[in-house]
Image (cartoon, rainbow, N blue to C red; front, side, top):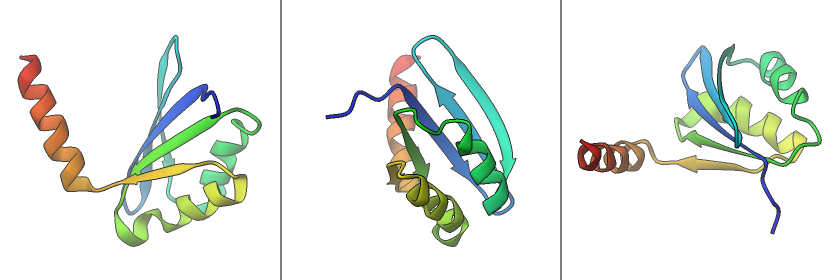
Length: 96
């Protein structure tokens, strides 16, 4: 099993990707265009690192992201939006 250094969460929309990069010591947020060029440029800076990506399954809006990640050999986990919403809502409600 690989030891992942970075976890990257992606919120996918038609025109933009909101990206959160989490490592052991910090969390960074980015917003990029949902285009092949922008996505390739962003993930080029993480080339050679052990990372994993999680994104919501939004149908055709995440196709370019999935294609680019596949070309880089980066694992990507797609999460059902409703499942994500319900699980976070349950968790957030228990934290208050």
